[in-house]
Length: 301
Image 1: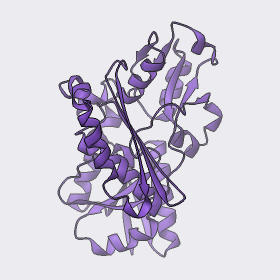
Image 2 (image 1 turned 120 degrees about the vertical axis):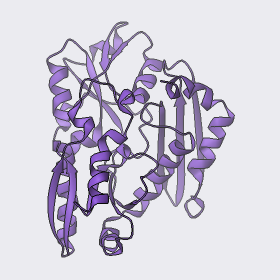
Image 3 (image 1 turned 45 degrees about the horizontal axis):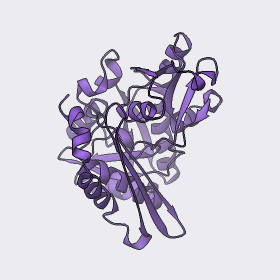
Image 4 (image 1 turned 30 degrees about the vertical axis):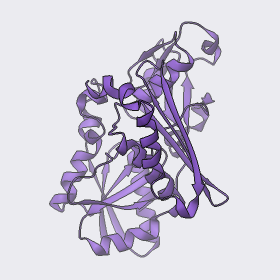
């Protein structure tokens, strides 16, 4: 079967799409990659929450899928809204890369000991967690693809910028990592690649199932369930980390106020065979502890 793959045109998106293409070709398919420019890639001077959230990266590919211009679309799973558009289905979740957050520094790590420092990130989740740990630091917004953000940092007077390790690793930029932020709870589904397709394309779904990584799917879907139950998007400071060890699934979730002064943490674990619904259970517990009150300023933006 010949499969037309829709992709954003950033270097990272194309890396991910070629990765999926190579995997499909190993199973006997032919592929072509069709590059499309999303609104999120085109407009770089507006914070994501003001543009409508994560959908700005997926809308153009969703439309191409529904019109039949492409057969599948490849995304960073964390960029996909928790509610898919009617007519679009999740086909495969590939094995996850390291999901942690990291910093890239302009000159070094000395700024961590300073009362005043400037950190760049477009993520409210990263901003809130950073300010909780370093409340006197200043956060500035930064947009653009990975290379563009690194160039902006290096040409600025900022001290550091926060990135997902997975993107840097995939682009061969591990040498730029100044420190791993293992204390920061990453975004739901961070580090995983997801493939979506048009509903009722059973032949496409069958082809995609060979790419699906079961453990990654279990973890990332639980993380996204937590976000969905909290009615969250990219503007809400919510993090979720789920992992599997010795046939047991462990859930760690966090909800913060925008300034990082308040935080609700939820930790759960249960046998892997009983993992269904753990994200929803964690969200209910968070809401009982007042998560909706912490998120309300972001919901009203």
